[in-house]
Length: 177
Image 1 (tube, rainbow, N blue to C red):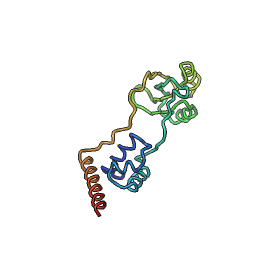
Image 2: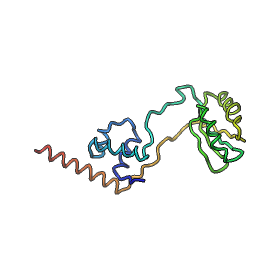
Image 3: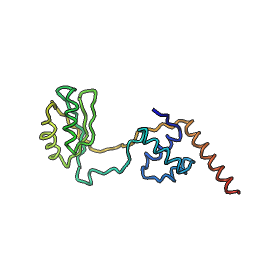
Image 4: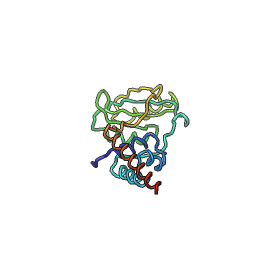
């Protein structure tokens, strides 16, 4: 994997807080050109550090008022791929994980209400061959939603400050001419 330097980390820190921030604002905050930001972001996409961007939809505004996590126990762990293929046919499932612990899999799904949730559980999930048991946990409120920490070290912060100061000095020299 390619090395991620302090400028890459600073860019990631900024754009993960606000994916819609203009590159010129990122460039100003980082003390580099807009072109440098564009090139860095494109490289981060190309090497798989940035895997997507877009808008997040509030499920409740579309009538999905129940957020649920369902622990799935399979007859055999080897049935995972088959079950995932079946889960992909259920649009209310928004995440699926192969896990350790008491469940073979953990899924996150949204239902309109408890009746819709019961229909999904009884008539969809539990009817999939290989699904032996389900345990349902209803989320009452999402309190935290964030990205993984970027991990700017003190050296990274110092390097970014030095870049910003260098750019400011160059701009000052240009303005004096």
